[in-house]
Image (cartoon, rainbow, N blue to C red; front, side, top):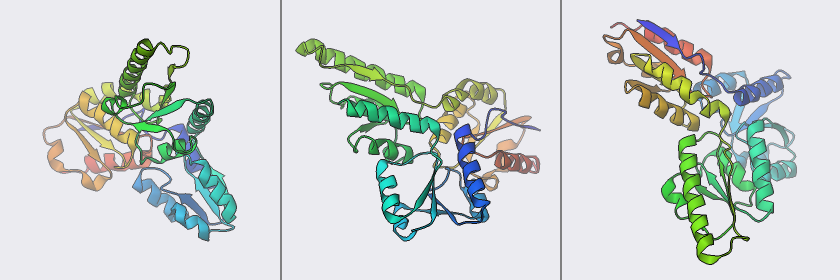
Length: 292
């Protein structure tokens, strides 16, 4: 049985940057706290915890005066920065530059009176941060059906959480554009209402689509490794499963089942942008050690 790790899988540069920042800060020996799980992968979180990175919540900021707190790649709303300053907490900002750019663009449109629509998940850390840059006035949608409920009588701009799927984004963009155009024609308010769609999906997520499909289709069985809370992990796994129905999602090697590999000649391993290479290598070793 030949087991191959997907060459395009592994940390995106935003995650690499965040972990590099965290590890560099910990070299000084000072306590470092991550505001929320540093990435959506429990195995990597445990590795960093053993190095000294503790995970905290927003409520903990009040008791961390004089301490260093890491802002993870997902970013935070402006209120977090205000609260940290009030509590005397030093923030180490490791927000992914791609996310920072989305925050800046959303804030600019909001300040110019646009209705902000975000394609994403309401409870995702990145979206919570984006909402904060609109005074929590933006509308979050995750489906075409929800987009159908958006007010078509206002000038509107659509953005996306960086880890969502591109196909659905453009479906939603099409629905909003059509509804707003129909409203304009019906009311003759052409000069007052317009619509923009800003594709802010990370290229390292959307760019993996074609390569992952090809890789998954070339294998008898696919094992996709990611944290269950990983947004882009869910998107990429769905792509993997579309290309190869014999695809299995696991978080760690202990979840592998011998029955998946009986009579199998080739196995592919891939993962999310928050899945470390060391974990995929561990899964590869475990598969090769399975008695069939």
